Image (cartoon, rainbow, N blue to C red; front, side):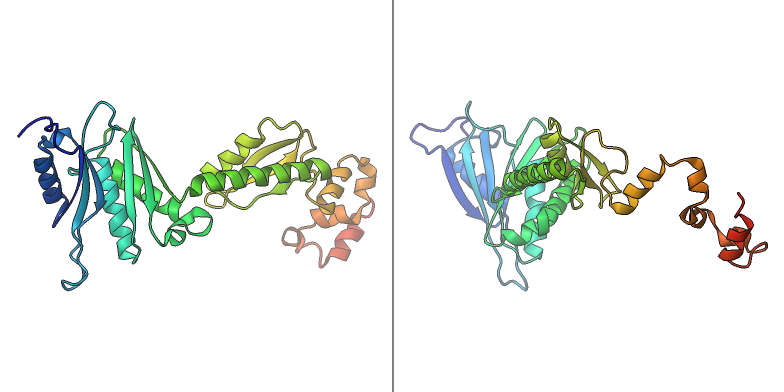
Length: 284
């Protein structure tokens, strides 16, 4: 077999067969090249269907590898591109979702693009389903891999749309926090989305950001810069903030302070009720 194609041969061809391997073999034979000189794009994996019905042939697009060809993993083998495509296709097909998967692997980064008629289901609420598919795909691709491969999955440009929405939201909330002096808590977000908020507001002169809570409920707080700790939580918290500056004797005669200190489980042998506790400490 020739290493390079005949000048009269096409440089790219699409083939159907019972399996990806058969389709690739037919394509490289027709192109007149060796398999290692081919760039393979699996358009559709083969499937047997149910009870022999609804089966699908594998469809591949094979191009001649040249100096300008993208650094893409050959997909006929067990590389990360082939592994990711098969996993995603199998999972979504099992859910009854038709999907076309395209992927490019370069510099230990695997960029995957999904397309199909029901991508809204694949994205899920605020991208939760897409994030889950990305996480699981990363586990599958990196299993047994010596070097960590970063997996990024997108569809219908959702990632960029979500990033733009978070930037716009954080800008609006930062302006509100600066105007009112009250901090604002956003909904729980994944680490990637929290970084978008932090990065967008890190140079803001009026507000600061930090995260609170445990995963998966960890969320971003936007607060006024240089505000006292606890400021803006509400009237109760503001009142407690003010009480820190009250004279000691004024605090001692406050019923609220006694209530905060009184613990029935510690005094039940000595006092029958809270009134007796107050009477006993009236001269403190």
